[in-house]
Length: 204
Image 1 (cartoon, one colour):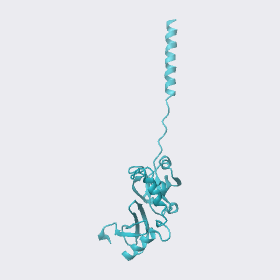
Image 2: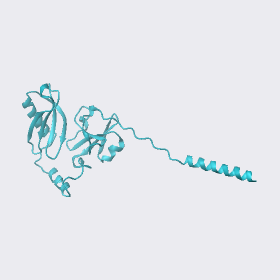
Image 3: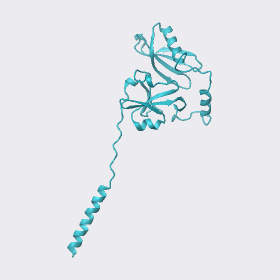
Image 4: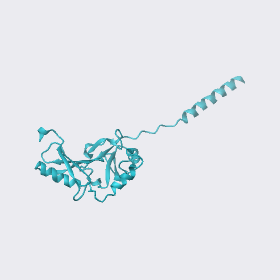
């Protein structure tokens, strides 16, 4: 009788152990992160904050169809990081999700550096009818290209990238024969300020 009890107890323990092992959850495979290629003209150290996996994208043959004057184009290495931005996923290039971020949402996650009245001031500025558009006809981009061409005496081939800040807008353009882009400092009232070469002066 004791032998039967011992055998039954051992069987119960074995079944319990099997049940515990079978109940262990299987770890979900990690989502593979795509590498953002240079063909997408990435710039900056991360979007919306430095160190984040997404990056701002400039103008190139691969991105030209997705660029919009009223939005910022961002590239993300995974679906999760793209969805976290809250913008519109407009394309996928080599696994990189292209996200269009409306200008009103482009500073999402960057923090409010102006206090509780910051968003109101930003909204008022965006509604100012006197502002000159960044892209399009008679825009900051075209004015920059004209000024660089007259300064350098060589044709401008196209825009390399555009970097925005509260103080000014940096517009980088490619010039025929130049190894590096030329940069304009443009202001939203239409003024084009400093024009400078971003490469080595000896290469001019």
